[in-house]
Image 1 (tube, rainbow, N blue to C red):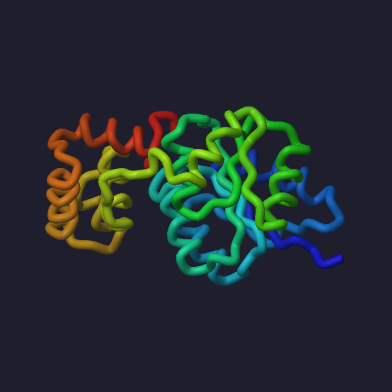
Image 2 (image 1 turned 45 degrees about the vertical axis):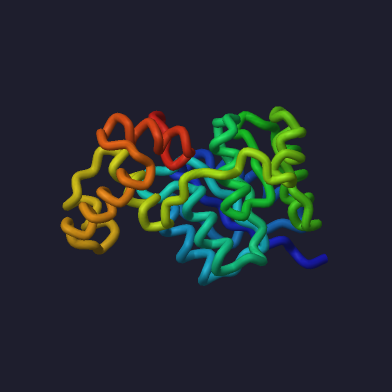
Length: 214
């Protein structure tokens, strides 16, 4: 039987090690790579081309939603499963909008992780059993999915602003000049009609771009 190739992404190595132990007990599943942040995930997926990507939703720098969006755009064949401690709508919507096929809660059991991987490999969506399953029906109907649209770059900048980074630091991370970062900042503010750092931070959290407990 051909093994399912899997990449794990989480900024906590202890959690990755635990997931790896669970998955590799299955003879038909194999971990081919690991990453600790969203940007590293994008690079490793392009290089190794897994069948399944299990990725933490809330990570500093580039969150799992934006990483999933870019990976799905470039490699739509990769089945993405979001992994989170959050069961709120904005995180779930964000992952499925980004192209994920599954969403798991971190406090779920080992069997559910295996079930999720098996399910998405059958080209079916999987939602953690502890989340209202009617949510998948709403997603299929396209309900409550409209949002003020920011570009992928604007979302990256907004996350970094919400995480307390200066324009210079954001520029260093994204290889942009501070002036260009400020242009993105102004565009973001105009699009969502919010003009203070606390308001931007609250909006970023509501949209699942970051979380206070990263």
